[in-house]
Length: 281
Image (cartoon, rainbow, N blue to C red; front, side, top):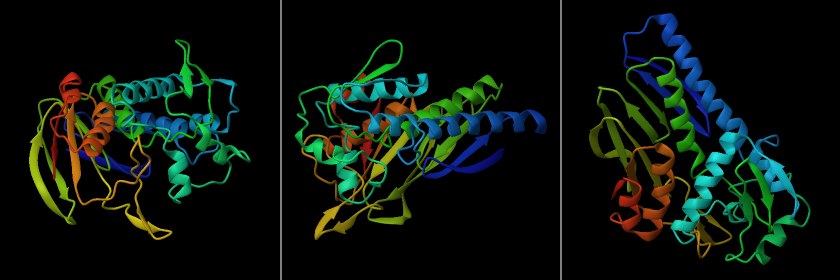
C-alpha cells in the first residue's frame, strides 16, 4: 500500500492506494485526489475570502451569484437535507459559531450579523436554480463544514477511480470512504476518552463519517458551547457521545451524523431512505 497525507479542510487528509500501479501512475493518482480536495477547500472554506461560501455570506439580500458546479452540488444537498430533517441539519449555523467564537467575525458586512436574528426559520433564505445561480432571499450566514468535507472525500475517490486505481481509502479526519476489493481497518475514538479506541471493524466499498462535540466543547461567557449547533433551537451540542454513520457516499454520511446526533436516534427512519446505518458510542 502507498499512503500520502496533506493538510486540507481543517484536518489531515490521508489517501491510501492499495494497488500495484507503477510509481509514476500512483503519483499522478495522488495528485488528482489531492487536487480535487484542494478545489473543494478553495470553493467552500468559510475562512477563504475568495471562496463561494465567503461570497454568499457577503451577498446583500435580493442579490444573485453564479456559484461553481461543485458548490452548487453541495448547497443543493445541504438544502435538501435541511428540508427532510425538518431543520435539524442546517448550514445556516454560522451566526451562532461566530457568536461563540468558533468562526471569525472579520470580513462580514456591517450590520449583517445583527440582521440574522430577524430571519424567520420558515422563510427560505437561499435558492439555487438548475444553472447554479444562487439567490439570497433573507439575511443568513452559512458554513458548509458539516457536509463539504464528506463531499471532498467523494471527489477524491472519483479522481482516484478516474486514474485507474482499483482500491483505495480517503480519510479526512474521520470522514472516509473506501472502494475496491480491499477491506480497510477502521478505528472509532471513545468519546469519553478520545485518545482511546472505542470500536474497531473492517470497511469495504462504503463511506463512513463520525461526529461528536468532545473535542470542541468549551465554556463561552459562562455557558457550555461546542462547534456543533442544533439546527432548530440554535443550542450547542455538549455531550460525551459520538455518532458514526455508514452510507454509500461520504457527503451523505457526513450530513446524516448531525441528524442522528441531534435526534439521538441511531435508527432514525431517514437513514433507510439514504441507504445508511448508524451507531452511537
